[in-house]
Image (cartoon, rainbow, N blue to C red; front, top):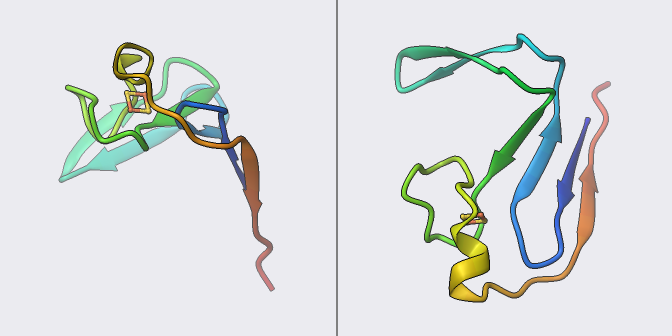
Length: 70
Ligand code: FES
């Protein structure tokens, strides 16, 4: 599994469209094949990215975090 760190932006997980998530007991269904999580701390819809990182001038390096089970 891998998390992509977008340059100056969010943490992105590529998940199958229709993946079910449970956030604080509330089920949600992913409508896209991507889940973008805020890492700038300014989203109005945490833990999800809402694009505010662009307005606040968030800066961070791009990268990847990958892990394997087993
Ligand atoms: S990373 Fe996009 S709003 Fe925070």
